[in-house]
Image (cartoon, rainbow over all chains, first blue to last red; front, side, top):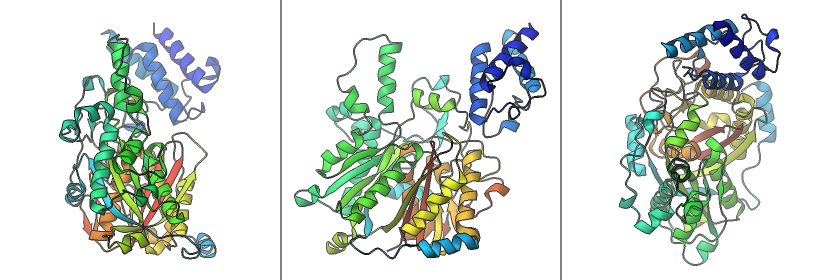
Length: 88
Length: 422
């Protein structure tokens, strides 16, 4: 199940970045992937739609958000947490 | 200002208005916004540093993640308009008409006869009749009805406010609406200024109006994730986004000789206007684009940077705008940037979007006429990227001779107006 979530997230980010999923690693930052602020907001929307979750993210203070967007690894972990919370 | 820019300014500054250009003055002002239903109440709020932001109240607000805004309270359209008018006027038109009536009353002008033929109206709005769209989409989509009121189109169209103002006063010259998102009012007022200055019109009613605070209006803004959930804190290091407001501001821009000949009370002179486009990004602002508009407005008004004592900032309270705007001002004004005052009144009346420049022009007039600088309230922590005198939290007494009003819109569209004390 967790692998499946990871694959779905990677597919969404890959589409936004116009890359192949295998070009994205846990260390990749949105900047590495060429995702700008508008692309990030769009990606978060796509993740919310895909998993039917609500992601707390304010573009004015990305560092203060509970949703850590610094790398693919942190994004995946945060989405997994929100999906688990929803299931609980 | 860097030596290089300074030299350029001196070389390219135009000669004082001559060869047919008319002087343009403001002889009337009107407003309704979250701080008050008229100009005196609004200016009193500016002096007190009063905040008009509070919990939003409208249908389905519980389904929004952003639940604060600067709403006009109380608002009962029936206090101002009859049943037939309410059927025809969206809230943004109601706000514009109310403001225009105040402005014309103050000016003492009567547009019957020849003056009406030489006068017009240009107003800004971004969303137009957004409440009307919202209500009628709900009727057909959510409630499944197949019939809407026959006046939906004339009520929601973006030019409805300008048209009703022209009808109310018999303004038979140029009349139209400008839509440049958050710079709409400044673009509108700039064009009105140019029309009177060129002699194309004798009097122009101008400003802008917005009424976007409804479920669909706020829901759309939520998507960008640039709105604050708690407060608007322009230039403060802990700012976390904009807060939307609603309302209108309308002014009478009049040919100076015409105003003098009839002994009108002159509130301020409009001396310069400039606009620029970043041609870069649909949402992220550019310091260079903003700086070009600021510098060109000074040149258009025959002003030196040192003449400007106050700037009413665009100051939305977003991370991106405030640091970009400060960089633009610092670069445009050089050393003088450390001596001038710049405040954002949006922390009080919210971001009135297409009407915001008009409401903010009142703070410019107050600075020139009353010698009171409206504060940036909600300011808590210094931000090294916004290291200007932002008049934090308390109004200040100061004599200023010239002021600017900045507006920088989504789409990269910038519009800056320069006023001078008369």
